[in-house]
Length: 220
Ligand code: BG6
Ligand code: MG
Image (cartoon, rainbow, N blue to C red; front, side, top):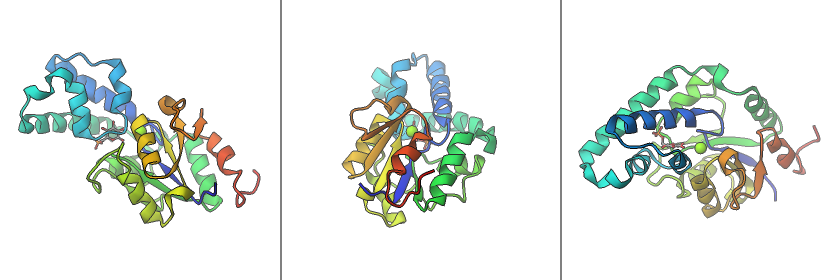
C-alpha cells in the first residue's frame, strides 16, 4: 500500500451538510404528507438528488410526473441552499482543518469527490474553495455513487492511480463506489463499521495514523 493522494467525500465527511440535506428532505416530505423515515437517512448519503427524491417519495414515487419530480427536487434544493447560505468558515471543524493542512504539508495530493451539484458553493462557504488540488462533483458526472465515476475523475485530475489513493467516505454508496473503482477506502461516521471499508476511523485525525505508516510520511 503506497498512498500518494487522499480523496474526500464532502457532505458528512468534510462538513456537516448531511444534516441540512436531511432537514430539507424532511421539510419537503412533511409538505407532501409523506412520513420521513429516519432509517432512510443513511440511504440518502452519497446518491444523487433525483435518486434521493425517489427514496423520500417511497411508494409514491410513481405518482408524480417527471416535471413534477423536477419541481420537487428544485424545491428541496432551494430549502437546502437556504441552509448553506448560513455557513461560514467557522463550520469547518478545527480537526478537519488541521488534518488537511498536515496532509498537504506531507506532500499528499488532495481532492474532493462528491455527488453534489452544490459542491463549489459549499467549499466557498467553508473557505476551502482554493485548497484542493482537484474537485470532482455532481456537475461533471453522469452516474453518481455507488458508480465509481466521480472518484475516477478525481484520480484522473490528480494524475494518480486509484490504488495509490485513499478515499474517505461516510456513505455505504460511497464505499461501494470507491471499491468498484479500485481505491482503498476509509469509512467514517455511519460508514465507520462497514465491511467494505479497508480502514475504520472514529475521527478525522485517525487518518494521520493510517497515512503516517507511509514511507514518505515522517513521524509526527
Ligand atoms: C451527496 C449527498 O453528497 O450529494 C446526497 O450525500 C445528495 O445526500 C447528493 O443527494 C446530491 O447533492 P445536491 O447538493 O446536488 O442535491
Ligand atoms: Mg457523504
